Length: 378
Picture 1 (cartoon, helix red, strand yellow):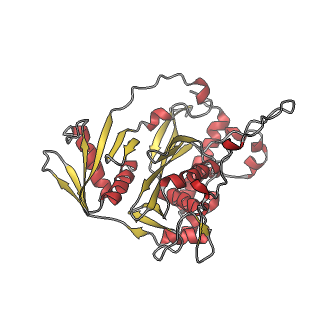
Picture 2: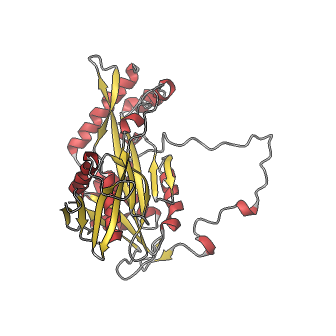
Picture 3: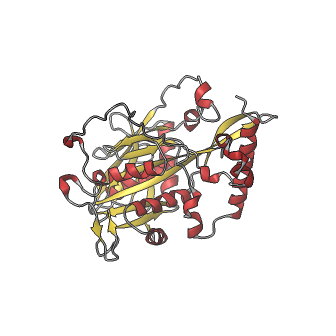
């Protein structure tokens, strides 16, 4: 599909500006946690519908009114006051005076909120993503999976004199040529805590052809700095100050454990030298770092239901006027695989891809998933 000259020029300019920013680099924590790095609010959510003046709104019935945001089920306050004076979602203790901390595995970080269940924090997470300009594509509290639809970070578009003047009239034609989405995994952790991870995915629209009048979407690496930025924003949502959130990111606790390959079952399985709670979280994070999407998960059975994520297919409808003119038919759903996380002791957990009968899957595709997990967990 051809794109207008204005859109192509704006996209090229945005790509050039982004390249210059990338070359400049972000040398400090304050640089890559700067709030002006993101602006998804300009494109994601439509304004609420208004009741016409000649129609009277239906009277509100008290039984349908939700409780105040600062109350949990049963009316008890959800926030605790720390020694520093913060009213936080986490419960302060001797190890975590702010009621929460950050753990990390390589460049992956996740938030641990003390004394709260995933169910108690779920409404706050819904508000968090919506307040930041995202539409929720997956909102499944029973499985602890929340993901956003693809959105454009308008903060990447250079705010030059042309855009501030003439560009205001045709601002819709400006595009970064990229789309971002975020997946949040919420898990029950050890010691009555809740683990929250955020994983970034990105696609870039690349111009193709000799005259650069067509385009295709290309997958780009996740941005750990962007994930950290949203973790910091989430901690502020939960009651911390900007400085406290940045300090917790700086003081992130390493959470790694040895991973070995076991061939005793006739096919490769993995042994993690850690408890089921921690292994369950790390396997979920590792799956998020691959091209396999977690469609569902059952913690009681220790099963992640995954499929190959065809992000290219999801974004075929994007681009200038793409949603109006796209007429492609949807592909057959990709094959589903079952990744089993099973406790073998207090500090030993086995990870394997299994079939519907719970037996180790010896197929080449299943063994490829095990190989990818091994690479990510090491």
